[in-house]
Length: 117
Image (tube, rainbow, N blue to C red; front, side, top):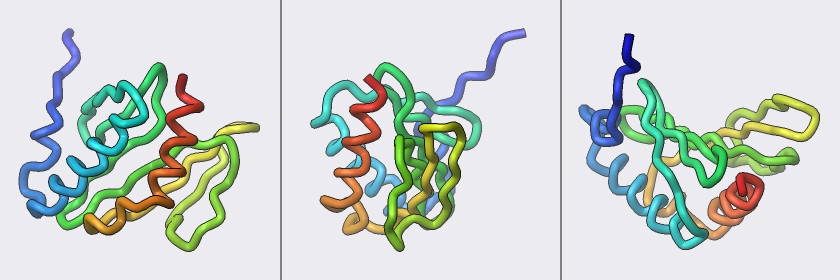
């Protein structure tokens, strides 16, 4: 049995056009850090360098960005946080607009990216 292949484009079908525009802006910024590999799954897109550092879960009018880190991020922007091992945390941020892709968010993602090398 072969594994089903998914595409990034499929995950944006039926979503507001702004959701894709915000994702594209995010990806453009992430690629300034170095190589970013998009790994589309059934319900999400894993973003990886050597290993995964973030995940995108699309919704109709926004997406949830799951950021991996080695410490809790203390911010009201974090809508959910989970410690998954002694030194790994998953933290979710709701991304609704182009303005959400800001210096603070990119700093968190740069840390996550650096951990994935």
